[in-house]
Image 1: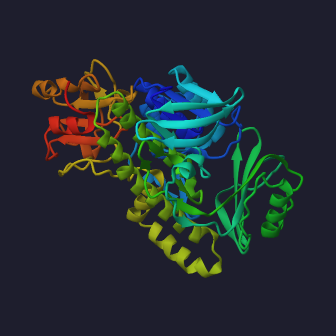
Image 2: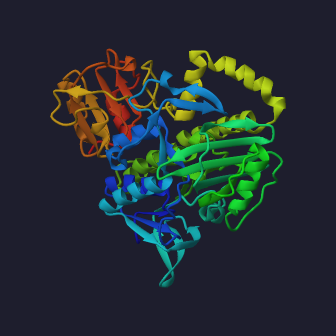
Image 3: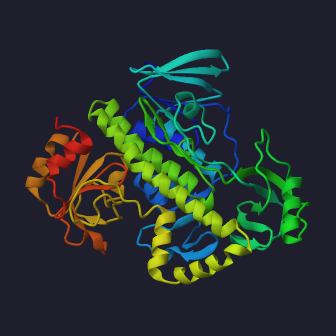
Length: 488
């Protein structure tokens, strides 16, 4: 075998997955057809949940100064994300190119094998391993590994080669996205609905303006090369009456509103993550963030199985947990598309939604949906409110190790928080200390409501609560065995 895992695609999902695997000591090869990063801004910023994930891996500081905001929208209707309880706000203007750079540097430091200029031509699962035919600078060759993950985008070769079902709806319109220098336009951060469509304007660092132009009635095109800036400027003038033809394009692209999701995220020894598994209208900046979260969910599970610490059945929970998240993503982006991109016939619905959003309970629901903070996995029965949900940031004191629940997850391992100095609890967990860190400490400062009166919490490497006391019907060894394999 050439590696434990082969990852096809070095975008945010592929790089995040490679980093997660390397944290667990798994040998990984990342194949990327491009010889160098494009430098294109593409997806901008992070949702609050992705900010938490990066913080839980100690990566946030690598991004430098980040502009954050509680201002958001749902289908172009303003929503105050400040109603959510969390340690982080959303980041607004981090270009995807910077995200890819940070993640690639992280993976390289961890010893990941990133092979650029290597195009995966075919994939075959022979039952005992996965074979990949690769074409690179030195010619064609074959690589094998026990597992392979396709992170190769919406037109995924891996998805097609292995035969994943990919049902959904095709694009009905084409929209433009462009980063342009030399423009002085009024910001339209959440977009503006116009008689002929929708436009969005956002400032980026370096005097660059991000434009999104959605003109109703524009038929979708399958392009082999990016559109010309003249097409963007012409559509902009038809919609707004303003001439932006003097702008200097840095990057121009087009996208559609196709909505599709694979029926299974795993097929034998092959997995899909990110856009390979789901495509949708990029409403609310959710695509890249969901892709990164796919990778974090899969990474520790794949590592545990590869290293012989957990049964292969653990891998099926990747589909069980992430497919519903992807389905909900498609639902909410379709809904936003109807609100944002339809004509005057939808204005009554916009007016009703505006009234509803004025109620905190509705704002909280929509903000939780778009931010990823609402995710709830079926991780065990019991009345504890955090079971299956993200572990909130909890400052700790008296610990010999981590100073917070967030810091405790930096190593990408499971964490058992002993908040009551319970020697018996720690004794019962000793058989799993090779893969679960036990942190004995007391909460410091304000304790989030869901953790009130909690004496212990078992947190998976991806930051979700698998067991808590009091409040879980199963006992601790049962939960440890289920998620981390038998005791050593």
